[in-house]
Every structure is written in structure tokens, then in C-alpha cells.
Length: 147
Image (cartoon, rainbow, N blue to C red; front, side, top):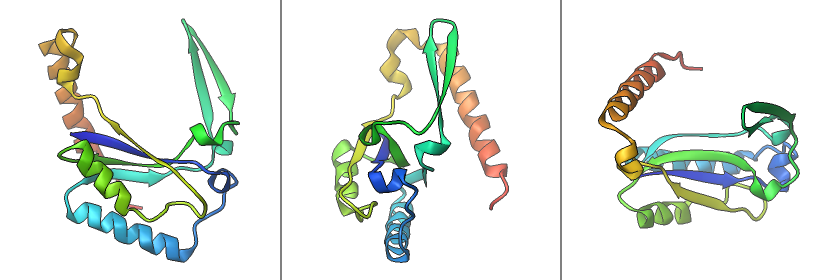
């Protein structure tokens, strides 16, 4: 199963406080364990919401709102995308994670929808299109220059 693991924002992350070298070293070692275990598919830290925008949808209307956004506890400061055998495996890995913030913090784990979760509405044609787009996306991701 695929899960998206969200590192929730904190007052410090929203203020733009950067982690110290010790925390960066711990997080790199943790990420290395995830990679070696074949779990980590991707992940990154996110800039504070002061650098973000939110697009609100209401029917055909789109409204763009500039950050920062008020509810820090509802914001995401980083993420991982993992391939795990079960939710319990994801929980076990998160429990091994160094505290990603320099203060109390939370991490949410959410399962990613799989094609079969959509039932009959996700027709064979749509599934074929989805697989094609996934393959194209992975191919393009492999061609991006490394920074």
C-alpha cells in the first residue's frame, strides 16, 4: 500500500526557522534507512505558507489567496511518499523518526487511493489512461537534471 506521510507545520517552521545541523544529520540518516528498506518513494520539506498560495474552487470560479495561512496546525511542512505492506508498518517507521521539528510536532499518515478503491466508476479505459500517465510521469522524473 502507498501512504503519504505529512509532517505538520509548527510555529517555528512557519516562522522560517531552519533545522540545526544535528537534526539535518539525523533526518538524513533516517531517510537513508527508508531508502535502503525500499520504502521511500519521495519526500521533501516545504517552504512556510508565507511563500504559498491557495486556490479556492467554487463552481467555475477560482480565487487565489496569498499566504501566510492562519491555522498552523492544519498546514504541512514536509512529506514522504512511502510504499509499505500495511498501515502498521508505516506507523512503526514514523515512530522511529527523529522529531522533525525543534518543538513538539505531529506527523499524519494517510493511505493513497489505489485504482480499485474507485470501483466501477474507474472504467478500464480510465485505468489504462492512468497507467499511461503514471509511466510517462516516471519517465520524465528520471530525465530531470539533478541539482
